[in-house]
Length: 96
Image 1 (tube, rainbow, N blue to C red):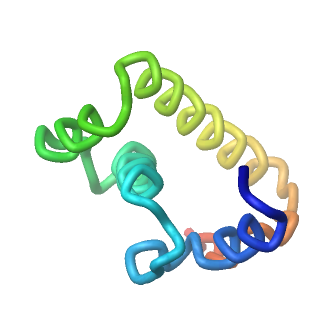
Image 2 (spheres, rainbow, N blue to C red):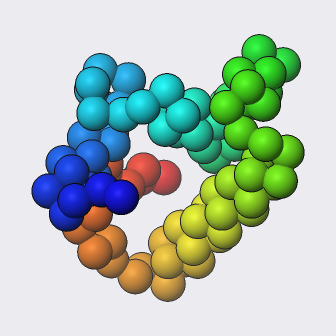
């Protein structure tokens, strides 16, 4: 179980997870997988899927993918209705 300070520190570094030593291999794999699922110009290639299968069971990958999809739905929904971010993510919104 993470302490509140650890959780906050990770939340602040999630945008730079590749360069942070706060994240475990399992967390890094989940973040790489989430990026590949989320970003339109990327794909979950065979190498990433194999790496994901090394640290997650099949049912965990299904659940992780479902959560990523749900968060992407929220993102699209919130953007459409101009619902402002709550300050958890410091990445700017893309301007079309």
